[in-house]
Length: 149
Image (cartoon, rainbow, N blue to C red; front, side, top):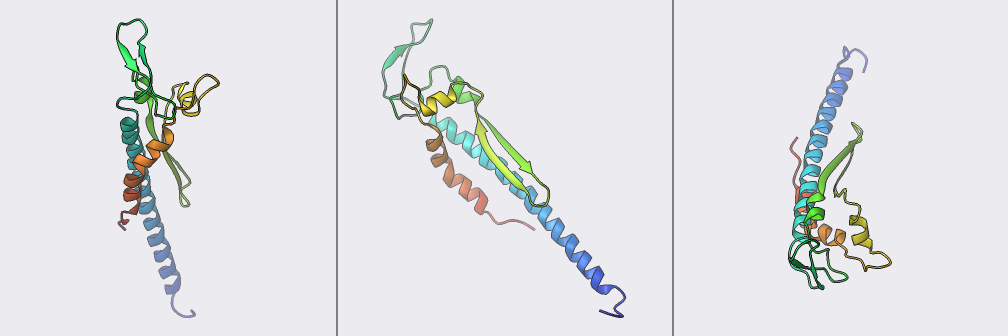
């Protein structure tokens, strides 16, 4: 507009500043929610990899103690607890304005993938899908919360 003394530019810069502030707030809240979702996955993992299984009974190496293994199709049994305790939550964030966020859990144990998919000598002991199913309601609840601007 002519003769407005630059008022239109002031308003548009104020709107841009306000929008950028809102985007930063939403991105921070989304990152926080992703951390909570990763923790929900970790909690679900602890529950899925806990408890008795229905497979064969074996003797623990170098011990008189025994444990019951998992049957094919069940989540892996806990013999030492190393797999169960190896999972750690992670959150990755990319970008500033158009933010992409990934959240999950991962294990550094070499045999985790073998247990999930099986091998030529062992049937799969799937645990990923049960973890996701157990955590799904909590994760959906986390991301359905209203954002605060």
